[in-house]
Length: 128
Image (cartoon, rainbow, N blue to C red; front, side, top):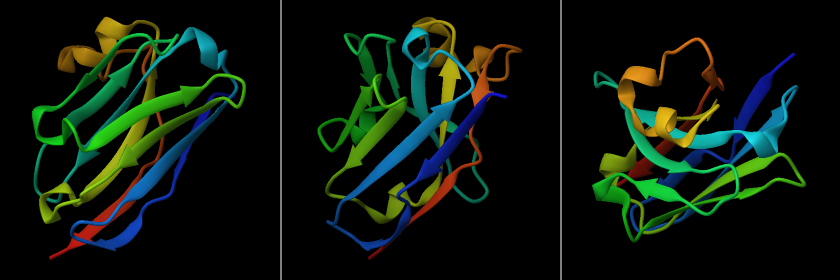
């Protein structure tokens, strides 16, 4: 059974750092593009970052560029998101997701497609 489990969220002060992890099982992790997404209370889900299956291509939402870094360890079936200089506006539930192609990760219309696989999310709260 395919499963994505996020961890590493929590409460942090503005300016602090967190590293999120997404552990994947039940699928061939190294064959999937992966992404991090977030949804703040009362807002729509937004894409944070995407990473190709080989780690060679990545994208970042403008507001996190220079602060967040996405990475993966295919040997450990794990995706990471290093978040530095956190801001209160980064507060949200963070989700990881797996896609059969990089383009699907970057295209909002594909996020709910039949081949997308989502985790349950982890809460990140940044206090002023």
